[in-house]
Image (cartoon, rainbow, N blue to C red):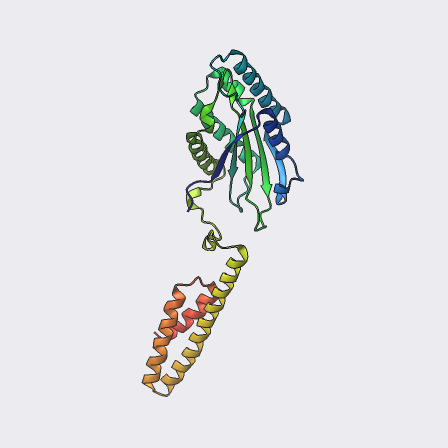
Length: 277
């Protein structure tokens, strides 16, 4: 089980240049990060939205330099970017993703305690792009949305957006919204390759699983040989040999109980086990 669906947070740096760099990245099919991306889909906003975020940020920065007599560092980040990711195997529709993003943005707006006019401007500075990923490849992430939210609204900077509490809020909103609109609960999700572990590379994991499969087959074959010997001993009324083979069968059975067997393997083991009861 995981604690939450994945959300990462980072400020969009380099002022207006940074905002436009992110805009170009979001829809760049040829970018090296998009080798495993099947589709780039705008959910909210467009290039004009990013341009608006940049302009509002530049205006605030100019006013800051003109009227802030106390000095201080000028604003260098005009937006916050959140990346909301689902594991491979889950592909909400475009409409479902739009509903999820709406819920997340609404939760963030409540955190920032926006008034009516601020909320109207806030809505105009939301850019969201869905990246649908190849679901069959072992590389790359699952489907995810890049959500860029302008930090400057009215005459203030929404500092709450880059604080830890904003990440907590959007994670909670993401969890609830995915359950509401898609019907999947993060608490019931188990990674397909949970045995793989963080330190194992793909080839090491595959090698380990192959060895485990060989060991299981070896134990099952041993059980079948031991069962034949047990059956022969019973026919010959050799109780000593029968007990010896039965003990070996039980020992191998206990080992196999702790392994992950296929349905076919489990049937073969149970047939032998039921015969010696």
